[in-house]
Amino acid sequence: MREQWENTTLNEVASRLAGTKNYIVKEESFMLKKRWKTCMEEKGFTLVELLAVIVILGIIAAIAVPAIGGIIGNTEEKADEAEIDMIIEAARIAYAADEFETEITVAKLVELNYLEEKDGTDLPTGKVVYKSNPGADEQNFQFTETTTTSTD
Image (cartoon, rainbow, N blue to C red):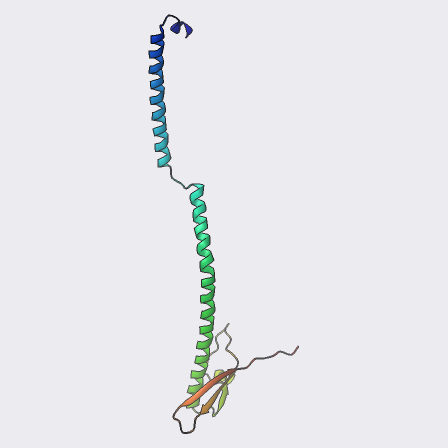
């Protein structure tokens, strides 16, 4: 290779180097474009994108969990209210059938088949009291729940 450069003038060396340099720059430019195209075609997520998704999911969970807990609590309260309304309606039917005069227990309503106790569910224990208002044309049924205390 050294023999190749021995008998050349400075201008020849410069022109050879300029041509080589130009060739190298063109080759590097081609490689950069090819690499950029390859990077743009790659499928997948970067670490930053994955972290952003995790942060967003965390924020959504922080908002949703308490909201869902509140919905469940409200649903349980409304189910209890509906159960009491069902007991009162059963007592009205029993009263209309002359099954009692002033009060009836939930157990008696179940016994007389005005209420049905499903497996796995517990009806509240208590009684429905009928109060009539003399002179008024309305009937008033009230449910009072009794708590059972166990003696150990």
